[in-house]
Length: 169
Image (cartoon, rainbow, N blue to C red; front, side, top):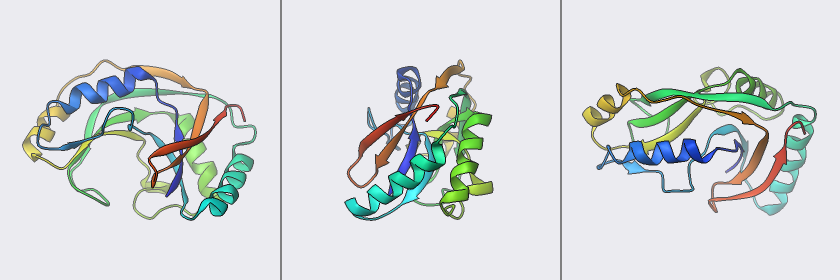
């Protein structure tokens, strides 16, 4: 699966890593693998990726940089896919939501997680003890604010970034 992801500052990934320590039975995201998905683009081989990237770049054209803010710790008690619960850093960003909506006009939204169901977030951990997850969502965290001035094409199958695009594109 290819996606377009927001570039995260180290303060966000460090916070996620620290919080994951309080969920010892959950599957935490390894260092360097935290993501904030703006939009899933589709699947396919390398030639499909080139077409997806071209379409996404066209959709990004002129989209401005925008602000994002971590507002707290929340959870999906039942995940759309994979182990539950999913504990995450909640992201507030009207600019990110606008970008997601713009991309949904060009790429079919993934049912249950995109379009009107889109919840901007950075996953901390999946599965594990539900009571520990609930306790973590009650913890206050200092907000982290940053300007999103780039997005990255990400290949989930290989677990690596392909290209980064500066905003405005």
